[in-house]
Image 1: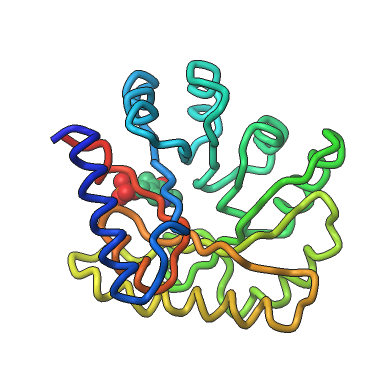
Image 2: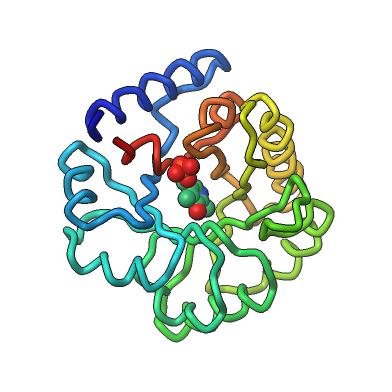
Length: 225
Ligand SMILES: *Cc1c(COP(=O)(O)O)cnc(C)c1O
């Protein structure tokens, strides 16, 4: 199967999952995850109508970006080292992986320097696995209070990764918890609207959509043969 067939499957499954939970499939944004994917193949995906691409390494993102048309949207979805922040501020539409205060400060510093605002999602380690980055759910409230005064940051939502499992059903509680965290955190903060939930990858995006994802990050289900 090629990208076109893969995409048709993904669109169909997103539609079904949205329908199942009474949601509008149109609001669900696909970030095509292109780590290790060549610029030529990314161009094929653009030709098939994809507009938004996610990378998990700054170097890889910066290497590919100039080789592709300027109109597409790039997202940084992987763990972000503080010393790389200066290279991507202004180059990406959304950073999915804000997970500590020192990183927030650095993003803020470069945003102000470059007279811009940086859109970010706060990554939450809902499942508590030591191998995963992200704040513990109990830390979220305090963190949002801490970063609220940083004018260079626009906090738009939350991101999480579910545990790797052969049974996508096992991911449901993780996605549900992220949605509830976003709802509760927005409630008592007038200046804050956590409108984006970035959750769901190739193995579990249908469950994520059923639980409220409006950004799914999909790699292999689009690009694998
Ligand atoms: C690789 C990656 C994905 C996509 O994974 P697939 O299983 O290929 O869909 C999504 N999110 C992050 C943070 C990733 O690193």
